[in-house]
Length: 257
Ligand SMILES: O=C1O[C@H](COP(=O)(O)O)[C@@H](O)[C@H](O)[C@H]1O
Image 1 (cartoon, protein in one colour):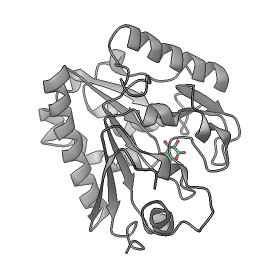
Image 2 (cartoon, rainbow, N blue to C red):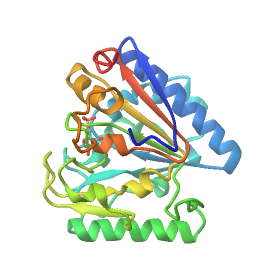
Image 3 (cartoon, helix red, strand yellow):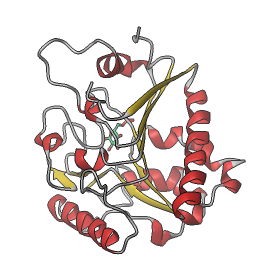
Image 4 (tube, rainbow, N blue to C red):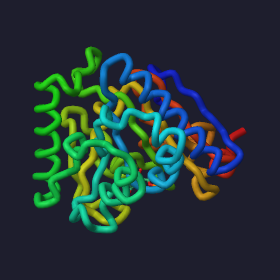
């Protein structure tokens, strides 16, 4: 595993429901901590099953107790489709999460869906640079890349995180903050994605993985399942400056020893 610099914790739960309960408490606790320490929390979302697993955060007591006005929302990856499309990670998050809590719309950083994949990646990176210049997002002292407080990530059955796929070059990008892909193996093909230097400059990352179909991939990523001489999965490269917590249900963890 490439988890050298991170404190990594693997949390196993009896059910996906229990993961959802624990993820809500974890996120609300970090919200309280970051808002107390620095006045806001930057939260980076992914798409996929994560948004449904965040459902307890928009229920009592968190719906009322979290200071949503201090949340800044970003996407670790986005499909380059209209924001109204069912393929859009923004729409998924809006329908399942953002529409249910009072985060100011000016704090929600969706992509510009009128641009090409390359244009959308350049635009998102330029907007991040503006936020850094405005001192809204800090740079990591260690890496020089933007430092987000909390990233909530999922993992696909091929081990991808964000839109960083096993057999695509974007996973090796070392200079850009945001890059693009036009041939994602998982549809839709055009996407933008944060690069690993940005992901790994984060303070806290939760990897949220549920379901038996991910058990083999979890065993490769966290157990001893990587065949000798094979290339690590992208999920094995997740290694934030702060803490990494894996939230697994019993099924996803079933092949771990
Ligand atoms: O395509 C994507 O897939 C991953 C994993 O999704 P999941 O449904 O297997 O949890 C997701 O994290 C990413 O944001 C999304 O664009």
